[in-house]
Amino acid sequence: MEDQEMQLKVRRVTDKFTESMYFLANEPSMALYRLQEHVRRSLPELVQHKTDMQSWEEQSQGAIYSVEYACSAVKSMTNSSMYFKNIDSLLRQAISMKEQISNAQGRRKRTTDSGLAKDGGGEAQLLNVTRLPEPVVPPSRSFTRLLLG
Image (cartoon, rainbow, N blue to C red; front, top):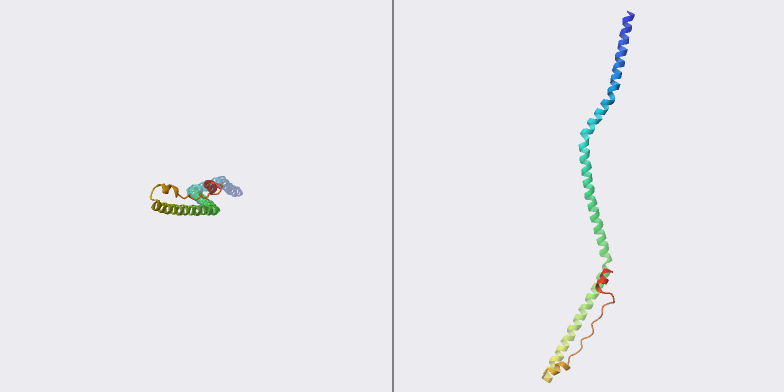
């Protein structure tokens, strides 16, 4: 009986040992299988998130470039106030010169008309022509050089 009992104990031990060996041998493959299953399920979603993020990054880079360009344009506009002041003074000078020319032409026409009425001929017109004032010379730098700096 001891023999049978011993055989039964040995059989149980060997079965348990075989079961443990089988479990240890298959456990890493089960873990890898579960890992592969997880990757297959989650990978498409991760790829979609990645493409979304790349798209958002491109859009934000475009927006950043636009904002930086707008900022540089505003800064250059604030720096150009000096040029606008120069343009304003040149326009005022041009208007003043135009008024002087108009006034001189009006005086000349009145002088010419009164000379014709007194003398009655075209020769008086040649004698009574008044000289126009000399134009005001703008600063030494040309207008385009002034604008370009």
